[in-house]
Length: 244
Image (cartoon, rainbow, N blue to C red; front, side, top):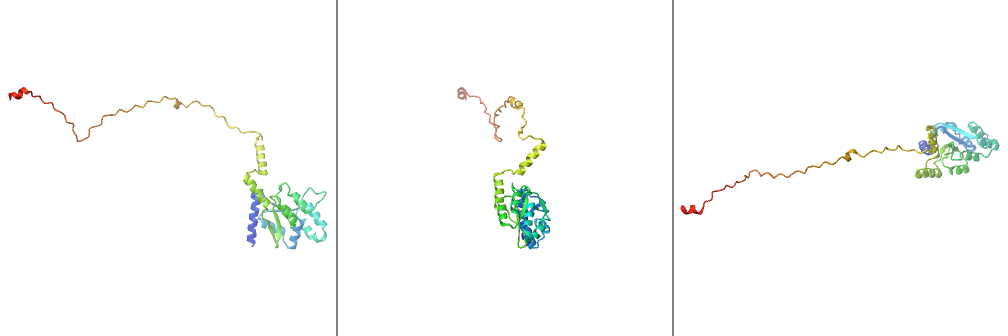
């Protein structure tokens, strides 16, 4: 069962690597519900997540998630202690914190530029995350961490790009960066070298030589047959006959 689960994780992870440029270290953004589920099921997140994703992992959360766990009191005190061990990423709600789900949604806006994985047990948040292409979703089920399969929105996005041969935004940025490094102007047009006009081919200007027509020679006489020569006999006149 563990091998099968690892195989599915490798397949789903490859999808995000090749289509959305996810690279190590993988940045996993956790909310309070995921930390609470890990505590309840005795899951060591720091040990099990890198093994499951088969690579280096950076565990992180947001300032709003910490504030939300603090406001919920003693019931989620253990989840708060777990979340505080991770990197706290800055968000736009530092002065006026919002709910953890709203904060994580804002962190993955604009096509998820920081390539965050979202780890949550909140079904409402998971449904909203699935409507955004290129955002991997993780959750805990039956005491194990699971990477969800790509959402229909992510699959449709990849199919649209492949069918229309559109250049992704990151590739356009790479092309523009290479142009700047090479000193190529954006609106410059490459022009090929003009070929010099050459004169006519001298061989085509030469006069054509007349080819002599072969004369037909008389056919040789077949072997074995000799040409007969006619002998001219002396004519005997009537007078001689009369004498005899």
